[in-house]
Image (cartoon, rainbow, N blue to C red):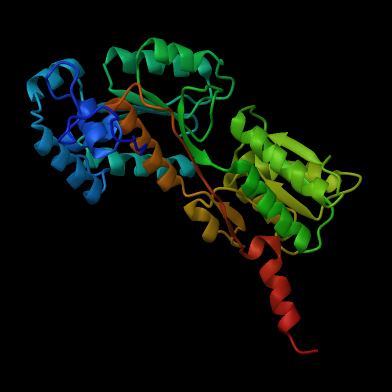
Length: 362
């Protein structure tokens, strides 16, 4: 939370002077050294506020004689305690984890989420946003569909509809965002493959253009450039298991076939593993395979998938907290929460197999 310095204008007793005699939220915030939105959260009994901060705000209210006009606040807010959650690919298990995280936080605040799937169609996304607006939701968490027009954040702001972008973003200086550091995550797993001795690495990317793909592609290029390796072997296909299985044929038929495949997400990587198996080949032995996201199935596949854990549930929680703060304080400073990825090494990259072989007696 942003902390504000104590007011420079104070009475001899150290109590901030109020503009018109009545104690305001801003006066309480100045006295407690917190933001106005933090005071609003305390008044609503939100668990998002730390106990020490809550005590400080309550002490400031008592000292200043602040009285909360709950009836007037309710009329001003006209809230429905509902939130729209619009995802772009509901069939991907990653979004199920994200949704669970959003729901956990909203439930503690007495909010309910309406979930919709844009299916990567901007026009469908627009229809759902308009419908959510008609139902007077208090705010929206949006995972923008590929091809979302750049004016969308401005339109939502024009509607005075609080919103948070999650996982992907349409450029906007005034928008809250919760996501993962895709570029650093891809660089991490690429460095791991290079460390295992791979020099010809393929990047199997989504065929959809959005911020998450762009950042992944940058990470792949950056890691390969650091080692003087070519980053030209890039194949793009739909981010599905079937497409991942089918792309294996193109990988193996390439004039200079790779020894490792770095996949856009786990769903694609699991498809690549199946495509290898259908050809009598084995991930981790004939081709190193890595994913991104660490969906629950990644640890259960055979071989288990090396991937980058991105904490989908935590991203959902952070997105929900951002939205609740935005609803409480529509004029507050925009916030960005970027979570780091974590490399999870399993059998599909060959690292564990190589380690076992090195331990065998000669």
